[in-house]
Image 1 (cartoon, rainbow, N blue to C red):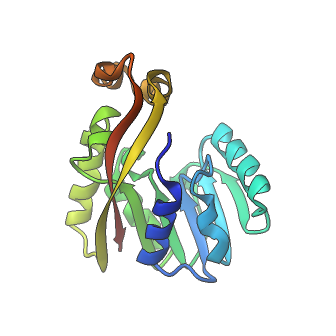
Image 2 (cartoon, one colour):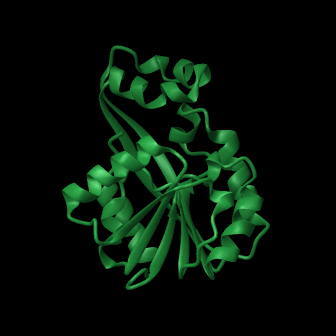
Image 3 (cartoon, rainbow, N blue to C red):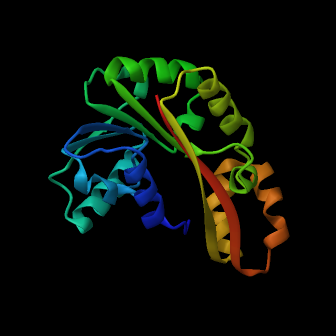
Amino acid sequence: MAADYELMIRNLLSFYDFTGKTVIAVGAGGGLLAEYSRTMGKVIAVDHDSAALKQLHENIVRMGLTDKFTLVQSDFFSLDLRADVLLFEFCLHEIADPAEAVAKARTLAPDVVVFDHAPDSDWAFCAAEEDKVRLVWQVLDELPSRRRRLYETVQKFNEFSELLEKVKSQGETAIQRIEKWRGRKNIAIPMTYGLALL
């Protein structure tokens, strides 16, 4: 995936002031956005996927950020931690009951930041995640938000094989939806994402 991660990090940091705060980052495995941690006091990175946490560890070592992170492999609903803010990092749509997840998050931190795909995003449709994403924002619509903002970026792939590699884990529907790009190079798919502070 080749989104503009630097832009996404700038948007996140301008949306909410994480300076010096302890952050529970849910779904942080992989570490594509780990640079955001430079202003934070401490990041407790939580993911249920050990391979994703391994990738995160490799990335934070490369970035010189190991002193900022504590890595926790756990199911989100089993967490018993406290922090200044909890950040759902492009993962709330992957949780079966986003309303329950937000309720749990509020027991762990006074501020909850949702950073996720937005409804009607072309990318969410291509990845066959539009129904899950729509459910997240329906849940958020029913909750008092202190602030919300939508942003635009583009997912870029040099070859169709890169795009296929990215979406194949999403199943047959996603694979069918990207078929129109087979044989093409320099593929660009718009991606809308949102931030909400609860």
